[in-house]
Length: 220
Image 1 (tube, helix red, strand yellow):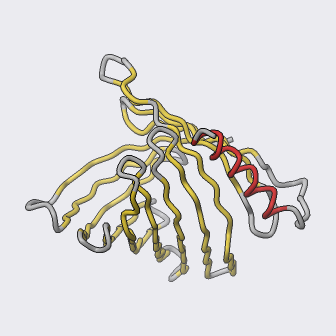
Image 2 (cartoon, helix red, strand yellow; image 1 turned 60 degrees about the vertical axis):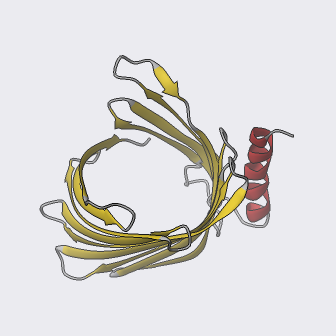
Image 3 (tube, one colour; image 1 turned 90 degrees about the vertical axis):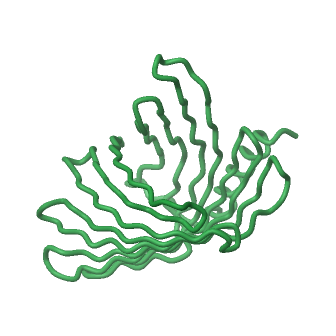
């Protein structure tokens, strides 16, 4: 059985098992369709199905194309994914979510099992505080070995009237052999365009790295 066939079967099985005893709500939209332009030479689309069950299981495939500046394709990444929600809390001033996911790279067989935690506090009528944590166990399909645990933490301070956010983050990878930290600023223009700038430093690099990015995406 090929990796792609296994991944497709795993995604379908995940949804079937997690939703077999849960009711489906007609008002929820099950289709996931998220095309994105990552850069001038990189495009992707996230396709999948989300069921409105208690655990909110979802699964699908992400496909993309990376090109040269002249438009010649150089890489066509394909990733199969699935996830479900372990915890979900929603109040007028507080929100918390915890989900577990599985990703499989269709090109090289690399995989990851992840747990993500998100928490949001409405501190004032104009300021929100958000915290995100991520823990991942990764498998290198090329080397055919597990790579240890990767972790990341971030805190975001958002100012709603100006649509601007300050972000502080820290990370550890390869069993904390490499650690890093960074600061960033993000600005939203409308509902689809985000401009961001960041300064990051990792323990395996002698100099900090500055970056500026633009992201455009839309959903329907």
